[in-house]
Amino acid sequence: MTVHEFKPDLAPPTSARGVVGWLKYNLFNGPVNSIFTLLLIYLVIPPLLSAFQWIFIDADFIGDSRDACTSDGACWVFISSRFEQLIYGFYPSEERWRVNIVFVSFALIIAGLIWPKTPQKTKLAIFSLVIYPIIVFYLLIGDSFGLAKVDTHQWGGLMLTLTLAVVGIVAALPFGILLALGRRSDMPIIRSFSTIYIEFWRAVPLITVLFMASVMLPLFVGSEVDFDKLMRALIGIIMFQSAYMAEVIRGGLQAIPKGQYEAGEALGLNYWQSTGLIILPQALKITIPSIVNTFIALFKDTSLVLIIGLFDLLAIGQSALADPAWLGFSTEMYVFVAFVFWVFCFGMSRYSVYLENKLHTGH
Amino acid sequence: MTNSAASETKPEVVIELKQMNKWYGDFHVLKELNLTVTKGEKIVVCGPSGSGKSTMIRCINRLEEHQAGQIIVSGTELTEDLKAINEVRSHVGMCFQHFNLFPHLTVLQNCCLAPIWVKKIPQAEAEKIAMKFLERVKIPEQADKYPGQLSGGQQQRVAIARSLCMNPEIMLFDEPTSALDPEMVREVLDVMVELAEEGMTMICVTHEMGFAKQVADRVIFMDRGEIIEENVPTEFFDNPQSDRTKLFLSQILNH
Image (tube, rainbow over the protein chains, first blue to last red):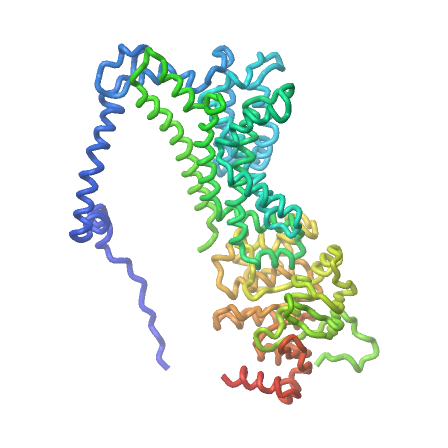
């Protein structure tokens, strides 16, 4: 009998390592690749350079009127002179500290929820979902605890955009989960209700929903019932987005193998236990990219509320363009608004990538 | 053989199928099945694919419904009644061909989930029980890994431990080694043999005839939804009564 000698493990070859190796392998790997690389550099670099020059080098940052903008570049003075309005809308300036408290506390809560080592995270999550919204509601609306009343029609700018987006996201997810479960239910009434709801709301454009909520609803319920305009927009957004969310989550539910349900049943777990402990954690995990995709779409869709007379970030920016003192600076305004939207959406996108990696439990 | 028909005390019947029938739509999958299993008995069920053997054991914990006849498990008859179903499931553990471990939970969490949520056992105690059974299936060191990081044989042993954590009186095995690489079959069968020696009541759908010879009190052969033959292993393998059984045995033993 011969004893088999296994070959020792060797280090991988070094040719593909280092910066030069990487460049050679990825960018100049053969003549066709090299030509494409050079062509792309030629096409991409000059516009990037001139954009950089316009935004930073030739730009004017300091001043308080358009006379400060003398160079060829961007006139950021326009943005800074309108900055408060872009953030707070028409919220009275002496009450803006209330919005600031909300901004700071919201940022802290988000940071606390994202940071992996926060102690008592479950309690923080429950607090931020149950108690915090009530505090924010009274803080922003006022009219109690000695705070002056600020009507929602005075809200605007970034604070309005964030209110619409955050409330929409936080409410659409649970409704979406319930609708998705309902559409897969064995009970015919629940199943058909969920299906009809989803198919109805998915089939109408959000603009129509908002328009109906703002114009038609008062006709139906009578003008003596004065629904808040922001509340109506929020309800419309939640109704609409939960239908989308439901379909995204249903896709995830369908991807869970039947064996997972059976294993739960065989162990004696009831429907809500196996749904909550086994099925949903897996279904939500595989749908994170689509869920975040829906969140991002929702965030940007909030700018549609301008058609019913709510002034979100984009609407405030656009109204500033009409100011005769600042004619001709629309590019700066749109670039700034786009940048703010981009920061939030990109943040959500990165967080979803982080979450996916963290929850990956395969090999 | 542990067939105790000769002894004075009657052995306790734990599973009873009486004239049990099941259809998938118009297709009659299980026909007039009668089966009595007493406490501590080990039954091996074999037969060609599509013969209804998996469907039969899946009826015993109501993963499938039967439409006619009776199934009585530990004195509880399986009906539409959810309480009866949960009662039966709390006595019956099941292992699947594809393990069906929960991939988002660690091995330990897989084992603790049902004791904590169904039996309301405190977490610390549930973990202690889980570790005891993970030691019995010889993988306590994998407790904090995820199922996806284990081999097939290890996953199936975790699945067995997960069932045992619920302290079942009866274990159902639905082709537990069919999805495994050949090198891993032995480790799973060893655990099952040990379990059998400890006196667990077992019904096992398997094609491992060596296992059947080693532990079974009775072997049942099914085809086209019927129980064709039922006998002690020595008789079943050496002296099959029906021609259908002979054909089946010649096909699986001589390849």
